Image 1 (spheres, helix red, strand yellow):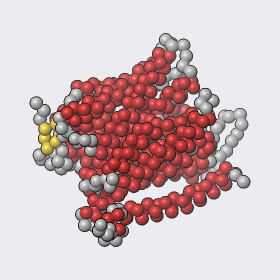
Image 2 (cartoon, rainbow over the protein chains, first blue to last red; image 1 turned 90 degrees about the horizontal axis):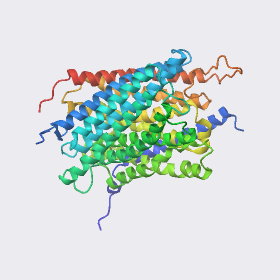
Image 3 (cartoon, each protein chain N blue to C red; image 1 turned 120 degrees about the vertical axis):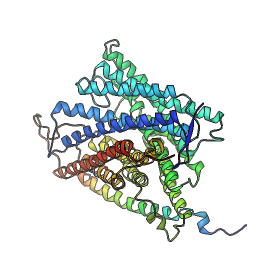
Image 4 (cartoon, one colour; image 1 turned 135 degrees about the horizontal axis):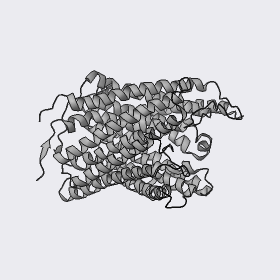
Length: 44
Length: 502
């Protein structure tokens, strides 16, 4: 069986990296937003 | 004998009756968007406390009609145009029941006209949801029924066309992905419109005092079988448009077509339960019923959207890499046709639908969060980021392909066309974020006067809502500017666009 190059496995590496960047940004925004909401709603 | 022409831009074989059905449904869509958008402008200028434009009765009247024209009429006329496009033009077959397509169009036009006239005359200031015991004029309900029956017939044309196309060799094993997406939309549409008939016909009889009463809990339950799933027709149609735009503009093909098809099937099976959150405080449904839908089933529909959200950009990347844009991770992104409004409209639609509409949909659809936010303007922000930033923007982008393909006219004012999706996208994003942020502070949705002037008890919101509602107002103005530009470009291109020689 011929050895596979990583490009044969991941056809769209740019979208994979973009997805990981967006995921990281989303997690940061999510927790910042949650903290803000807890302040707004007065959650102790 | 059907006469076909081969479109020089798309390579599609298009028959005259299909072309006319797509054309007239698109024209009706543009006209209703113009009216719905104008009413939206008046509504947003009233909800912006610094302006507070309309008097009380006109506010609720125009809000009712804004929902009907912008949420139902514009989008469903466009979807019926897509029905004809994907079940005949994409498959290279004729329209097998054009008379039914025209009957559907006539009923939708008549129903839409009746609703507009009755609401403007003050016969139905009962909002889009028209919850009983709020009672409108019988003619209002008749208009809704005519429009819904017309839409149902329009979607039935899809099934007739694909059944006959299969017989005539329009496709072999399965439909192309764009048509498959519209098949999912059409299946959801039949289920949705059946709910509409089941509740609107008795409500019409009740409005004429033929039926004594309509149970409000039963009304809400069945109405939301119409109200929310109708948005899932939009989601399926929007995703079908994303795939088609990727294919037409950059030659994109899904990385794994079976996975994309499976995601459409997930929509059919699970997305209708999204309407559960409208019923969370209704005592008639069990806790088990509420939790299983809002905490489990909903995520299977979300999974479908996430599959599409990665599959479409991946198809674009693969296509652009094949064109030679292979340097580094992101050369394809830099070299993507951002100046083409069909492409930019789709890209902005995917981004905003996913990151504003999708994330907030998951949060607001969850039982505990929904209880806190349901009647706040945060929900209005959510559905403007799905239906407007997502569906409307995707349809706007696809218009820049349909006008050359179907009307055989070039787009006028190419510079303005290039910036139109950006203006509209930024506007709707600001509008939605402003609404969602204000809603977090408890600002109610639909409400005419959030200062509660004349109320026996005083209440004031956190002062920061002024900033967020101003953001909403500015975003609304920007979105209206983008919308006006779109209407001018669409009608202007149809009338004055340079003819494309065959």
